[in-house]
Image (tube, rainbow, N blue to C red; front, top):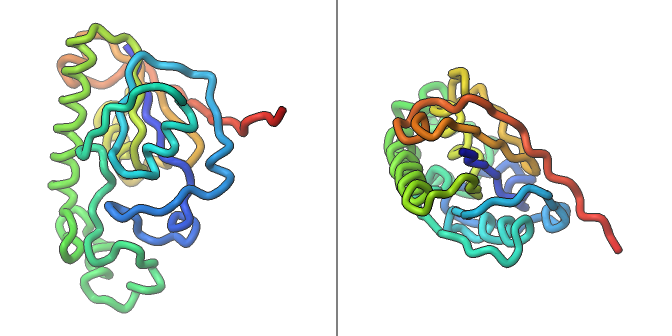
Length: 199
């Protein structure tokens, strides 16, 4: 069974290196020209517009099942701000050195974020089993993909050690019972996205 994870396209706020969680930002022009030959039976997406737009570009004319559980971490008052904006803020400095224990003002803690994503994963796998699906895709955010890879990739790697670039996906290949038990997948493969050919 295959569960594919795709990160939304590059946005204007991503280019500025600003914190972009529950706020949204339009896709940059290069992200409107991506494509993939990979196809799936069922498509899930974060309900934020940058994910919906990317899913509609990569998988046009397919129904999307939208889940708020698949949103990026909520950065609260730090949304839209960059390192340069925040570097003198004492709480921000402490959060950078201990992001699992501290939270952005009005934002989510790491534990709240991972619990929410975990509920979303369980909802997705229930749906996959109820419909007897072999291949599904999830369009989501960098932090969500990092967490899911740290939980389900064949070998454990810490959340922070995963690189999740734009314009690339991952396919996690599971034995059916391993997916049911929330065990790790047996194979992880990259899915590069390509620029659409004109004409």
